[in-house]
Length: 246
Image 1 (cartoon, rainbow, N blue to C red):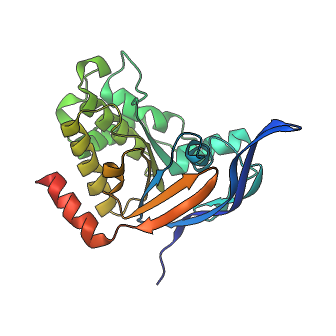
Image 2 (image 1 turned 90 degrees about the vertical axis):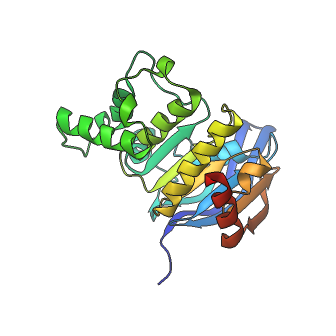
């Protein structure tokens, strides 16, 4: 039985500007990512990777082409509809963590639940779920700590717990180790590998080839097109993952 498609993109184009002054950020991009894949997206500045990730993350819409997220065509959804889809189906991990200051780890993790229109959870149920998510990322003893009381690696763990809270079909990680020292970065990559091993689908933007080697598939963009789409191989990734955990 074939894996379920989480992302299917067909001839995606994105134009910025008007009239004769136009920039083609994406030029006929097509790709498919299946459930359970761990994919890195790479490319130099101006390659189109940020534009692609914004569209995949339902933060923007294409000028032309189709984008199916979890078999739902989201290409022409309104901004309100896209916001609802983001909250239900996507979990975001940012380089700068994007946590609310003067707010506890638990409260930061609970935020997506408050915006989930489909949720009928009580306040106590939300708190419990947030605590379970923080326990999953190894921060059960930091639930009341505010961001300024946490290290960079711990703040990123809070962000990962927040990304998981609505059980998304896709996790989008934008340079998740970019602000971290080597050791903290390795710990975050180990955590992402654990999530992947549990069946999570992860798409990660990175400029670091060493980080990209940790995933099974690397998509490289240049000038708005896919320059290469290669498999690292499960055995190679297994060895790298074991090295991270060593």
